[in-house]
Amino acid sequence: MRVALFIPCYVDQINPEVGVSVVRVLRRLGLNLVYPEGQTCCGQPAFNSGFFDEARGVARHFLDVFERESFDYIVSPSGSCTAMVAHYYPFLFKELPEYHERAEALGHRVREFSDFLVNVMGVRDLGARYEGKAVFHTGCHQRRELGILNEPRELLRNVGGLEVREWENEELCCGFGGTFAVKMPDVSTAMADEKIQALDKSGADTLVSCDSSCLMHLGGRLKRTGRDTRVLHLAQILDSGNGR
Image (tube, rainbow, N blue to C red; front, side, top):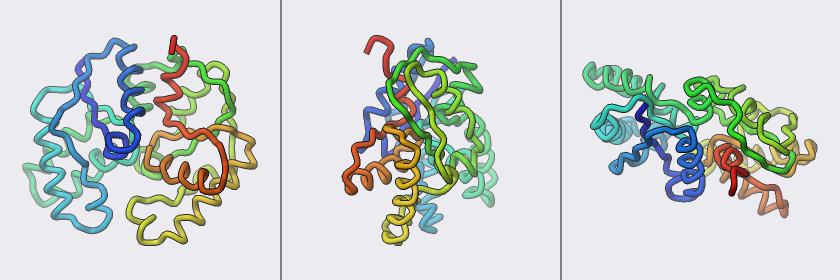
């Protein structure tokens, strides 16, 4: 199986350690990994802001880069960016048959990290160990577009030493929403505070998600409000222990 890594901007530019953990986890499964060097942003910021022509330009480049070689799967540690490619690229190219067909074909091979582990590789226990009490935040795109709800929790439940707790209104958005946080900062902050209040009530010391953008938003607010909650991507939890 040949697997390409699709590393989102937030991981590449802000949390590269997440990408390192993804590689370590997948390599332990014996996968042949390739990182296409020409990859850039998937175009989601432009798309969400209504700049469809600009988003199409980025999407064309994405298709060109990931079609250069024959990959069985393209794996990304982001529900948000996976949804952009798998669900919205076909929409972007709905009036351009050639690109629409290419987008549909590629979209079927793009899988979010936890979805790939559980539903493609059939893996639920990676031998990881992490001491703590955690809550899991499902990003909006992962929940509403991809429907990947149970897979991350299955993986977390098999981490030694980790207690996974439930928390109030887990389904609520964290308030980031890409450019939404810039355009509506007061509302965005209030939404983050609502999530943090629920986190406090849960008694958890660790916040886990599959989206670095959500973690950046909530992690920043946690720091600003004087909390020392650990904020980690699922890949980092699964990469813990194992001799490290």
